[in-house]
Length: 250
Image (cartoon, rainbow, N blue to C red; front, side, top):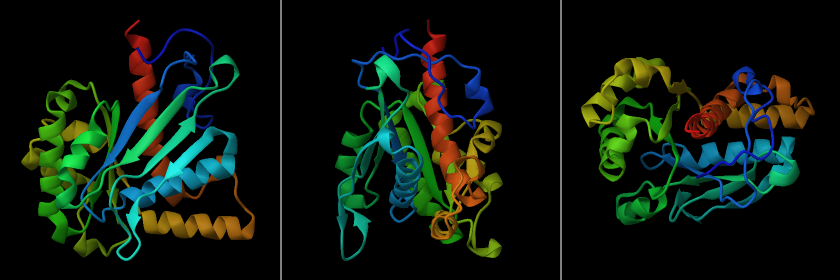
C-alpha cells in the first residue's frame, strides 16, 4: 500500500477540495509515480521543468532531485527526465512523489515500456497542432497497449495537457477535439470524461510569464500567472486523486 494512517497534512494550500482532506503517509513507503506521456516535442520535458522550477522557488526543501537526459544538439530527451518531490512534514517527511517523462522518439519505444511500469498516474501531453494529429493518435494507441484496462477502470489516474495553445486558432485543435482523438485511438470510451480532464496549456506562455514575474520580483504563490497555474493544475489533480483513492480503499 502507498499510504498508512500516520499523520495529517494538506496537499496543496490553494486547492480548496484538498484542504478538507486529512492525508496521511508512512515514512518508509516509496511514494507515488506519475509519468508524463506524449509524442516527441509535445512539451513533456518543458512541463516537468516548469513544475520543478516553481516548486524549487516556492518550497525548495520539497525538491529532492531533477535529472534530464537530452541530446544537446536537438534538445530531445534521449532517456527520460525524472524529478522527485517531497510532500508534507513531520514524521512522514520522507514521503515522495516521482515525476517521469518518456522519450517520444520511435527508437525509444522499449524504454517507454520500462518507464511506465509501476505507475500510479499519467499526465498525457497532446500537441495541439493539427498537423500532428496522427502522431498524437499513435502515441495514445501505444499508451493503451502498455497500460490496457487500467485506463478504463480508473486504476491509473489521468489528466490531459493540450499544449501549444499559443498557436493560431486555425492551426490547432481544441479540447473538444481531444475526445474524438482519444476515441479514435481507443484510449477513452467517454467524451464527457475526456473533456472534463483536459487542461488547455501553453508551456511557451508559462515559461514567458514565469520569467517576467521573477525578473520583476513579483512572484506570489497564491497569485501565480494563469499560464503557469494551468501547468501546475493537472499535476496537482493527479496527485490528489491518487492519494484520495488510496484513502478510500480503507
